[in-house]
Image (cartoon, rainbow, N blue to C red):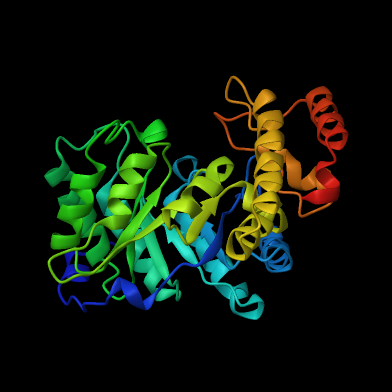
Length: 325
């Protein structure tokens, strides 16, 4: 149960104690054909992340269909992940954003209880915050409900309609001042100028904040700006591909970087081709690859038809995706 007692004793934890370095998979929520959650597939998902060189599961975010799930389902999903992460040396991050800040606070408190390493929250998407200050106030309550966990704001304006075009730099400055556990921002946007400005930002104590980049097809650009942590849906099944981009960047091998980034853009273009009109083509790919099958999406999202699944499979094979992913 949510209680304002959650807010009573705040333990200040520096965001520097939890540094995200490498790939964070925005995990799919596995489901059965009847639209109920398939919790039994989570151990296989965790094992696959480890095999693919992914170190962090980010559960119940956009890719995990968070706002299509109940609070109880989200708690159960996070708990099942918490039971398997240690055996695979994974660090659990739980997305707790919800339409009600009371639900978010309850999810945040639960994430701390089950041993998550960090939490993140997107803003409400129907009744939107009226100002940056209002948004920071909401996020501070959520963060304080898990006072021992680093807190990341989840910036995805294309989905939330919040801080579209401007305001995110101001948010960073205000959140850094007002949220003791603020660790940084999960930045899922194409505004690389704002990203660069925030990467250079330091507060009045000289502290910097983490910017976790969320556009898989532009990883190279973010690496060039200095980003270390990357959150993406395609890391669920193509972690090896993206690790080659990171390795190439560290080696100074531009050919390796650009080849693999081009491959990323090529296969993302293909699944987007089959993902119009609320169809979720991305969720079908692990099953086509022989990796853990995460089933269909939950309504209002729609799974691929059998015909389109076959067509997408053929397109992915034609570019050699299964050989180099």
